[in-house]
Image (tube, rainbow, N blue to C red):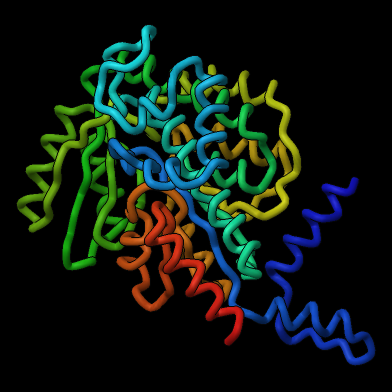
Length: 364
C-alpha cells in the first residue's frame, strides 16, 4: 500500500498543472513550487552503446561500483569486470566471450548504467543537490535499467531477466540467419516516417526503431532489405546493414517474445516509484502487469524513441541526463530537439559536469 501511494503521488506530481494554486497551506505551496522547477528525465542506453573499458574509471574510484560489478558476477556466473574492461579470453566458462555478443552486451550495459546511476545519486546527495527526477525512459534494453532505478525490479532480478531476454533473442535470431537490420539515414533530418512505412510494406520488411528525424532502422529478410536499400539510394537516402544477431523488434521475434513472456509472468515486480515512458506506446507506466505487457510487446514491435522524447518534451520537460555508456541517446535527442539540455554520466569528468549543472539549476 505504501508503494502504491508513493507511486500515485509521483505520477500525479509529474503531470500536475502549474496553474493549481494553494492559498492557505504553506507546505503545499512549497511542494508546488518544487514541482514548478525544471524537472529531470533520466534516460538509459541500450545495446550498441557498449565499449571495452566502459565504467573502468568509476569502478576504480567508487567502492559501490565495485560492489555492483561483484554482485553481477555472482548472479551471472562470470567476471563482469573482466568482461567490460578486457578484450576477449576471460573466465573458464566463456574464454572467447565478446562484449559485442548480445548475451554479454545486455547484462553489461545494464550493470554499467545502474552503477553510473548509483554514483550520480550518491554524489548528488553528498553535495545536497536535488536531481528532481520526474520521468525515466530507456532505449530497448534501457527500459530494464529504468525499471531498476524506479525500484520496480531489484538488481538480481533485473540481471536475470535481461540475461534470459538476451538468450532467447540470440537463439531465435540465430534460427533466422537470413534476416537482419538496416539503418536508413537522411542527414538533412527530413525522413518521412509514413513513406518509409510504405516502402517497408512494398518490400515486406518492418520498421524496428524510430530513432530520430534522420535515422530509422528497418528489419526483415536481408535480401529484401538490400533491394529496399537500392530504392532508398535512388531517392537520395543512405542505408547500411547493421551488425546484429537477429531481426530484433520485428514480428519475426514474436515466438522469442512468447517464450520470454513466461519469465516475465513469473517475475516478482513492484509498482515503479517513478513513471517510465514506454518504448511501444509512449505512455507512462508504473503498474507491474502493465509493465510486463509492454516489455513483452517491445520485443517484436517498434521502439518509438522519437515518440518517447517528443512526448516528454511536450509535457514541458527539458533536462535530460543520459546515464550509461557513450552519448548515443543524447545525440538522438539533439537531432529531435536541439533546444533541450542534454547531460550525461559515464565517467568522473561527466559526473562533475552534470552535478555542477544540476546544482546551478537548483539555485536558479
